[in-house]
Amino acid sequence: MAPLVEAGADMFHCSTRRFWEPEFEESDLNLAGWVKKLSGLPTMTVGSVNSNTAFTDADEPTIVDNLDTLMAMLDRGDFDLVVVGRALIANPAWPQFIKSGAIEDLVPFDKAGAADNLN
Figure 1 (cartoon, rainbow, N blue to C red):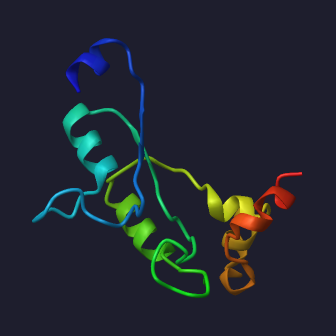
Figure 2 (figure 1 turned 120 degrees about the horizontal axis):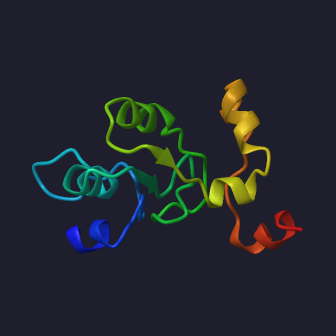
């Protein structure tokens, strides 16, 4: 990590499949947490933030309310920013839904219909 910091990196974007999964056994830090700890620089976490379960064996995608976990990790300083991808594509007004607490009104990401939401 030192060469990247010495080269002038200001922040690290740490993408994983599921942000809440620890990077190593016997640790509660995810990739962003470890990178922040080792580099001393701000990090961004991303990976199934308030997303659906399409990446698992679920037949029907559903909304997973993992915002409490996200906020707990953010509050303890594991990372500095959060990146939202698929949930935002499926719900362009995602920030307003989250701010108002209307999680039940979110729709799951649907790969087939994603292009419609980008227009």
